[in-house]
Image 1 (cartoon, helix red, strand yellow):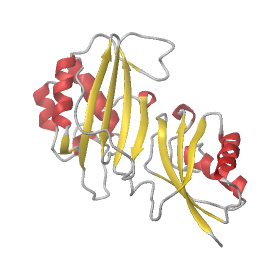
Image 2 (cartoon, one colour; image 1 turned 180 degrees about the horizontal axis):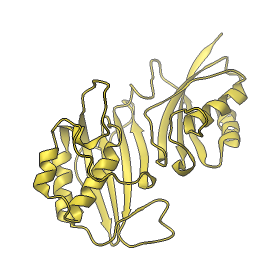
Image 3 (cartoon, one colour; image 1 turned 45 degrees about the vertical axis):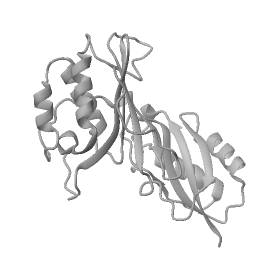
Image 4 (cartoon, helix red, strand yellow; image 1 turned 180 degrees about the vertical axis):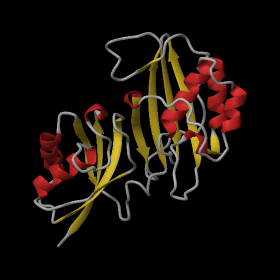
Length: 258
């Protein structure tokens, strides 16, 4: 039977899901997507994502791949029918035939995330921003972001792990866009550890509030974990923006000034 590998790009509202990964008895993005595909294709399928997002984390450009046997439906109609089943909290942005050897996780060369902070309470932003009371020291946050660029050991900024894998990551972008009461952190790297973005966002806030000194932050960077947890930012303000593959242009390294 003829098989095809499909690359699927999707976005979702993470507040209604218990994360990306399939879990018995819980609603997840992977579980919903597999169920919708099985309904249309009338055969079990296994969807592989580029990585996991935790419960409550949103995505604008999550990428997955799936091998489907004997696809009789064109991709335009497949996308249309999938969205009809899986919506409204998840939306398939694109379906395309994957290139030979493509793997959503192992073919990716970069992931990009955004974390949204607001320093004045807003009931309209409470579901998508982390409310942090008071103004933040932006220059010290910028210094810390610069220090994170390049390859470092982020073992102190992730959940404890026992899989034996290394905790080094190469960060190509760590930026902060400030506009009045808003601070948007953007970070891109070749790989991310579990809770790494939320831990780093929490560190930036601790620095900005004077609860962590710049020297203390540097002492934690490049030290293998686990260490004391520090401040972990809540998941509802985190967005997976994009996954970059070799055939896509990248945005280049660097830091944008606050």
